[in-house]
Amino acid sequence: MPASSRHPGLDGLRGLAFLGVLLFHDAWLGIGWAGVPLFFLVSGVLIRGSLARTPGTGARRLWGFAVKRLARLGPLYVPWMLGALALRQLSGESTSGVSVLGLATGTLNWTRAVAPLDDPALTHLWSLSAEEQCYALAAIGVAFGAGRRSLAALVVAASALRLGLWLALSTTEPYLRADAVYQLTHVDLFAVGVALAAAPDALARWRWPATASTGAVLTVLLLLEPPTTPWQLTSLGLPFAGISHGQPLWQQPLLTLLLAPWVAQVMVCPPSWTTLPALRHLGRRCYALYVLHWSVLTTLDTALGVAHPTELPWPLAIAKLALALALLLVLAELSWRWLERPADRWLRQRLAAGA
Image (cartoon, rainbow, N blue to C red):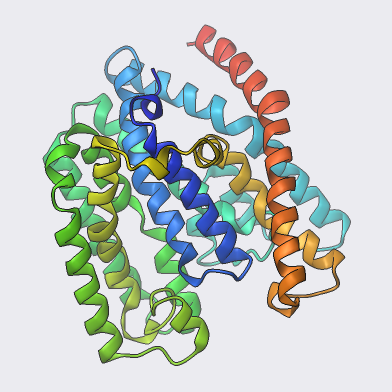
């Protein structure tokens, strides 16, 4: 039984995470970027359940899990990647070998730090690379009996990595520095999600104290360094305000403090809104929706003759967003029915037979 069927609200959270990212990329919601960390937290919960249901032990369980992940993600990711790269080639745009390597090996979150890739069809795939790396770490840990101490060590190691990257990139332009550190360090959120899968009850009781504590920390940070532009104010000072003063160093721990108890609460007793059919449907189709969304948004912007969505008048911007969501739902459903699900079944059979 899928983990999300035991915790139906988690599909709703994944749907909420996607909506946040969609609204962020369409310049409606500055804090929408937090949908990515929320998704990593929920993914940790779900992947722990998937690993627990994978038969075998040690290397056999590791192979079985790898087969399931490859069969689930590959059928859409591979043709999308190849198609986008082919279109770039046909349009005369060059793609560095480092970027191609990152896309092909699931390390785009690392290669982007040295070879930026500015393409709405491909840029956001860094998060899939980061997630695949989390899958690998979780699979190795569970397959070989890693416990809570190992998860705690991962959280500490991620914080140390974040600090090390921040110091190593001290001479880099501030925006790129913050962007690189943000993209490379999500393993702590994923590890907390894996831990939540085992014991959500205790943490759920801390949701209100965690919210109050996060609010207090945010207030102090904003007082110490108030945002200086409307974009930063819309974003509650989180995305890029204060990047010259170490914002990425506190961003992830703060999100973990805020989000983890609420994810635990959804697992224990989901609020009614998290089980709304429409939101759960978005969660079940969130993979294709995420892969496709930025291309659909930018294509519509181009068709409307604007370089950025904020150039559109409000009525037209609302209509464009509604059309984009409708198109995405249709495309995601077609992808699921005619590509992802059939290829998933076929690949699992072939890969399992070759094991």
